[in-house]
Length: 495
Image (cartoon, rainbow, N blue to C red; front, top):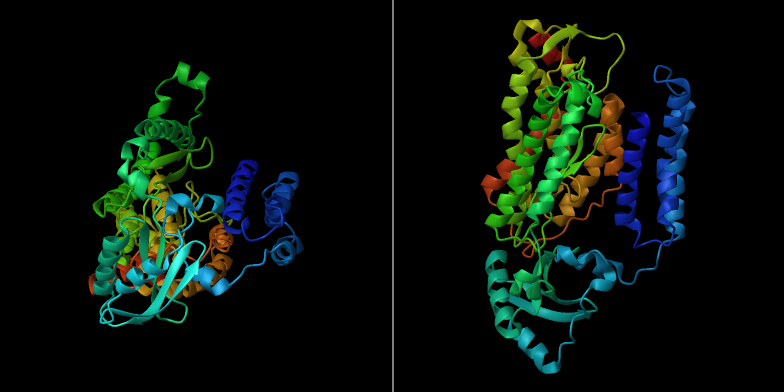
């Protein structure tokens, strides 16, 4: 299992490095990946040679974490490509998600002729947005000026004017600059042709979604049978087909939670007419049986309200269906003695509920007086799936980059504040991993997730109070899941 986990971690790390830094440094991706993976490789090698009961020496634990990030930074800077006008480059958004796979695929902006510049300036009434200057970039036309009315009204008015003058040639983006002043950007609308000819593009692939769904059902059933203490092999299936029934409770519960999470994103995106794929499951024949599910949005998000609603719909929908499953699973679990050795964050055979405030409260509510300070919980397979469900909810709600939580704080506070919040969240989770070692891997992964989030087309208009409250409640839910139960509350609950 340790080697399989290392392979999985290696794949995730490679994809993240390739996506985040491959375009801005000449240093080979494989070399950067090797440096990042060195600590995990050393620790895995020690475990393979000496066994899990003998922990690595302190020097082997600490020095790789000190040396490898420094070496990574040196190699990254050594191969870093020169960038012209970095501030402008950071400000220019790329709202067309489908065109970001390669910089060579970007459609150049046709030069604005002198007579067209006059038309462009006329699209900005002085009483709405008093335009100061127009900047021409290889992939965008930037219009800077002074906002004179409400952002929502300004965006809608100027968008109508641009469409009247230039048709669907441009997408209009309204964003707050690094100096705090909002500006408009005209970027090529590469989705126009696809929108006009939807029959030529297979956006939703129900056949592929169904195949992945069935494959994931098989892999999660295999893992579920292992959790139930049954061997799931072809020979065992031939002799005793009822083995499948042992693995189905875990499989169906986990897939239901993940599916509802992604369905929340999908239906909300459809409500705002954002083109998106069907939810796709990722099967995995080991570990959890799946690496989750995902959807892809293929058109820009119209405004921050839509960004907020699409982002929060998934975690909330998943959490709503997780709660009753978790409560039922805990009520049907077995209370056992707390192991003398400190266990991990999610040990299905002897879970310490005090690792999470929310988990401790639900465990006490479900098990009552059976749960004592010396007790642990031997989880029912459905409880295992539900515990994974709340962990997935927490990880998605982390307010970093393009995670759901990153989208939420971006919609609530704007791009600049969201980047600051994301950086603070990274550091806090790293500190928390000193108390909760189970979060260490995720804390390391978050360090390599870009803080910059994709902007909405109207990325200036703020949310209403109702959405702000829901966003704060989502962050409070994150805290309840990841923070350990304080000793004072544990004593009050007698656990």
